[in-house]
Length: 249
Image 1: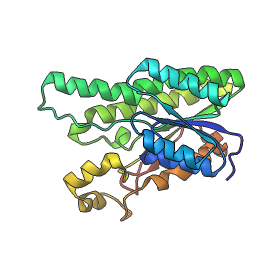
Image 2 (image 1 turned 90 degrees about the vertical axis):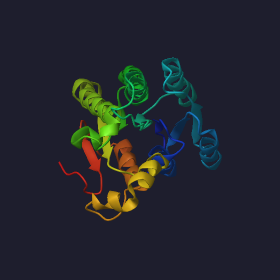
Image 3 (image 1 turned 180 degrees about the vertical axis):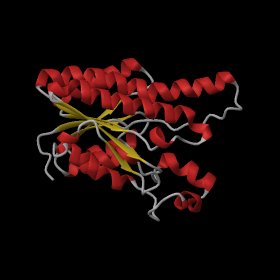
Image 4 (image 1 turned 120 degrees about the vertical axis):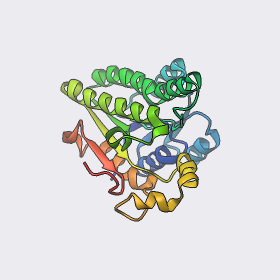
């Protein structure tokens, strides 16, 4: 697959799923914006290896920084063909916690996982309408469809909102040649998931899968690249599950 000439912004691209997607796109000759918040060393390592990349720091909990991220990406690349909305947090908050602490995590999760994506979507739509089209790839979650465990109410709700956002974009803006897709991973072996592996044990996680191997970011990245290539455009509005058969709709 050759994505030469494509300009793609990937949020949360310094590690995990986002990093794998960014690397896959770069290997296909795309120009890729590597967004990060605290992973400067990892982002700069990618930039040093791939001259077609550029790094952009932004705290997605701050809407002014979200706006600046988009503006800087446009300034650097001139235009964007695809925005991959991957960045997110997965923070537990037990019902037994105080209302104040529980609500703080709820708001933090919604701000980063949903509000930032909403603003980037709004700005992206305006940009894509001017240039005659573009694509959004939203990294959702199995949690939006089967639900999540009790300590992750905010995470599941945020991914449900993200999924609805993506579908609405596809339905409402397709006439402007704007396409929108959701990739919904199940449990994926990333740094963010290590706490769950330690808490529940790898055996417990494997017992929920049809395939006896935990999904990795490298299992997800090729699909993102295929979407960016345009070969899936008539599947706009679709959600593609990558969960090792742990939840089949």
